Image 1 (cartoon, rainbow, N blue to C red):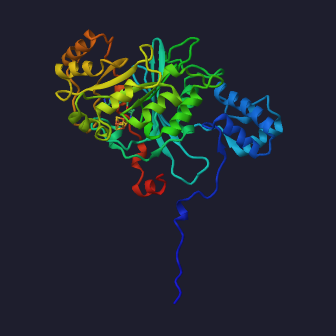
Image 2 (image 1 turned 180 degrees about the vertical axis):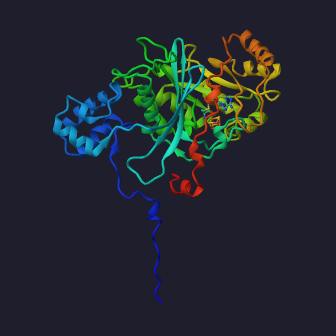
Image 3 (image 1 turned 45 degrees about the horizontal axis):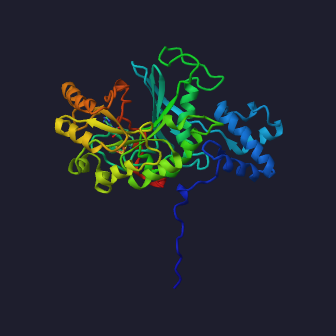
Length: 399
Ligand code: SAH
Ligand code: SF4
């Protein structure tokens, strides 16, 4: 008797034909490698990679035809093999306070038959700065009980290119590239300075669960010959993935924010369940020894104000005591409600009383003003449309 084995592992869900390679998100060395791959000599590849880097990151150019210091024939060849990726804009909402929220859709050009994913990115203008809140994952594997993103299953990690593309697209929309035009709605600070001066990795997802891609994206964003965002103006927020905290300081060198939210392990286990894996003592020790931490480079501790949960005077005093030996800033975040959430924001009097205790311990202006509440763009309210994807489709491209 003969047996025929079916070794078809579901080719229908696999890429059929690879599309052009996206240059956004490649390191300079990788870019040169790709150019060598289409036949350029090592020296030429290096030189052309520098030119492309400048066109892409300094000038925001996506059309190879406009790259005038590259020979016409080569431009045409590049356009066939490569692309400079920008997400599709599904929606752009503008809050009455000037906050903008985009829903971006990404298709992976190298895997065109995979379903697209969608992420949210938020721009928060202030008088002296403009901050872009960037997503690192579609959804989140963690389930912090007060966070809207936490109710959405992880669909997948974003690639370095997709993380950067949020910055590139936002800069394009805000007229932040040399030929760009600033929106004239009066909601983006005018003038010579950039619209986006700061980046916070505080959008959807846990950046330290997508460490390699986040690292690559942030090193490109801070590259002095490209986007040139200062590492002191880039903040990575984590719920407390302790083993990745030291490498973040040593290898990326950006500012760190910790989602603390509770001063006792029993409560933090409920609010930020990753605490069961890495409890407060281990988290705070990682902060004490964070590479580069100093009074000039403090760690931000985020603390969401939840009515009758974590907002007593005793909690405030314990917070101050816990952080005594760490160069720290404290950021009290009024809880931003979302449809279906089980918590309430602390009353304003309570927030003030809590802030007073924190203030008296020497921490300045600790309460974060909620922004973009009317368009559900405030901290912890982000949740993409992608979760509407049928489970079947999701499973097909789960990494
Ligand atoms: N996953 C990362 C970064 C994204 S969340 C982290 O947890 O740090 C950015 C910040 O918003 C975190 O401090 C998070 O705890 C907080 N947050 C989440 N949901 C919130 C809500 N509904 N109201 C206020 N802050 C919230
Ligand atoms: Fe994930 Fe951060 Fe939300 Fe927690 S707070 S569920 S880690 S996005």
